[in-house]
Length: 219
Image (cartoon, rainbow, N blue to C red):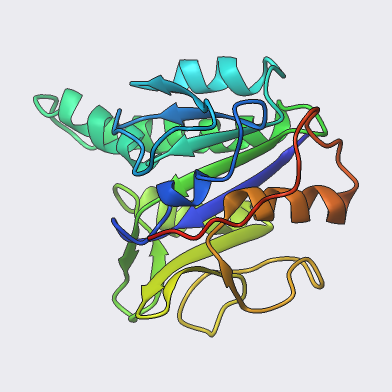
């Protein structure tokens, strides 16, 4: 059983840009929305476009990469919803919620102990003014609470000083991380640095022929 990490943020908040310091040996990107990377891919990052549930399950269980990123994971639900637009009844929402729940559990339970899977997802604000992972329908929110499946939830923030990850909640968001994993509540949005910190904290195997993050800043 590996480690799964949720990365939350609005569009443009720096989720995808946080992958900029990975090398091709460090990570494989499962690109649900098939968007180009928001930076020049000088490090040879491997990316599979039009990622589906089956592709994701096959990839993360293959143990071919130390880490995986499921980019824009909420589009798995959105695209399935459009595909089922002509179906009537609430049964389709149950199926969609179940498919997403099964994927989340799979990336946690069916991966090797040294594998890290990052699930990137957009956010929305609930009726109480709290930030949450964007989902489809009420079943995932009311019966599951997606963020509760993760020990590490990082929230992307963009302000006048740059792009950052928030590592702990202020009561209005679901950000969280184990005690002592990160030095501060706000860190640079460098997913390679995060990957190094998680592997150090839990004693996970490091990728071969790779070095510590050089912490290049996002524009």
